[in-house]
View 1 (spheres, rainbow, N blue to C red):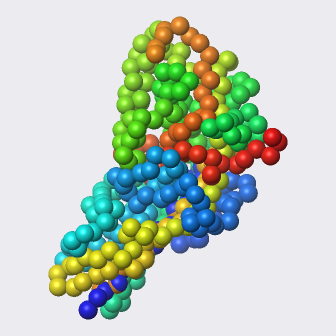
View 2 (cartoon, rainbow, N blue to C red):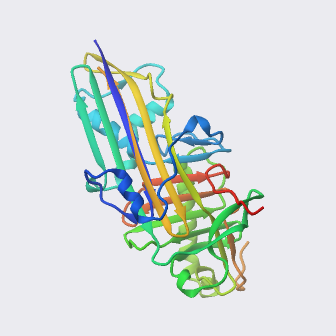
Amino acid sequence: MKVYVVLIALAAAMSSCHTNSNEPLTDATDSLPGGFPPVIAIEKLKTTVFVPTLESRIPHDKNVIYTPTLLFAWDEVKEHLPGGVLPSDGSSADFLLLNKSASHQASLGKAEFKTTVYVSRDTIRATASFNKSLPFYTSMQRWDTLLRFNKQPVVSFGIYDYNYTLTQNVDIVYYKDDDHFCIKLIPADSTQEIILMKGIDTATNLDDIIKQLKKQERLGQEEANNSDLYWKRFFTTEDKLLIPALAFNIAAHYPQLEGQTFTTGLRFFEVMTAAQRTALVFNEHGSMMESEAEIAVSAVDSSRPRPKTMLFDKPFLLMMKKKTAAQAYFVMLVNNTELMIPSKKE
């Protein structure tokens, strides 16, 4: 007899930390003004994709979004399949990665996400969800026309007119030049960090890009130990920082997972549903995110100080993680303006 498996994942991102409970995820929107935008199906977007794992192959011209919720839901399914999962011949690459990936296990503690499982004679339905709200101590500056991302004017935030108090929100991790640098934004919750990196080499998956980020972090530490390069690590009165504001609430199914079959023991299973919703608000007030998923199976360098103009006007990596965690709970490769707020003043 065929047994069905359903996986559902929900992810939300905000800039202050919430521990998951039985309360609705939408409570996370209380931490930032305005809340999340309305839900939109990913099919209505042309240049944005979700990936189920950090190891999944990524396109080079689209926004790429990852959260670990689908993997948390899949773990619950596997807990109820003591015979293990044996993929069928011809399984998709993403299904094979979903079944063996372990990178999500180092991203959140058990108290920081919620899972539910429904088991009947013919169906296993698992869901996973979490949210994070990370507001800044002091809201940053906002502009409608200063930043052009790939030559398109978009709403941005950061520090354009020097303000010492606002510089306390920013840690310059690495700076080579205005096209290669990495910063951390420091939220009020000191256990969390928001990392942005500009200057991304060609990569096949998000895990490869994270390795590039770690390389920049190592180079930045070397700069910090060199007194001639120490200026690179500090925000000076002549430095500029502009970051595109992001706002989205996207629901998607994974066609590369739905319909996949596997066996456990003598039973045959099919993945009937693999769905996820991820929402993010990232602006001058901080970051707010939420994610849920469901899966169901049935049966050039110089030592001379100079002004740093750190504009995220080209593709960049956005990552959110616990300081003590080995892996991130939100990773986004921003390649285009589809999820940004267009300037209305041009």
